[in-house]
Length: 56
Image 1: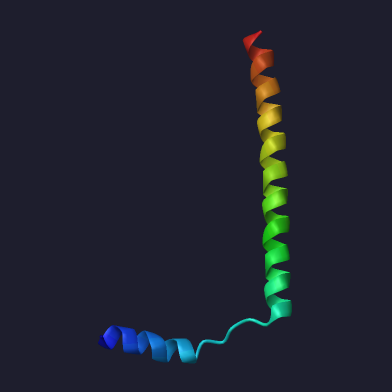
Image 2 (image 1 turned 90 degrees about the horizontal axis):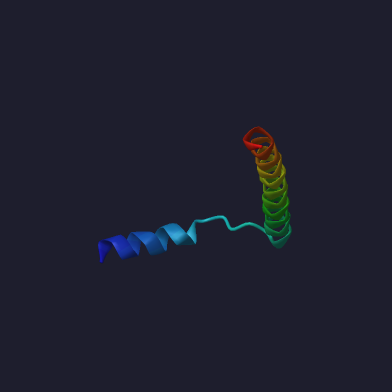
């Protein structure tokens, strides 16, 4: 019970992000995810072609 009371008290002092900041952070995460996906797709494609060249 003491734990829950301390959690509630702590949640009252949390500084929540503004809508603008949250939107900006979400867009950054989505862009990063897309860039990493493209990077790994290109690397995967390149390694696949390279290995097929060696196997032939």
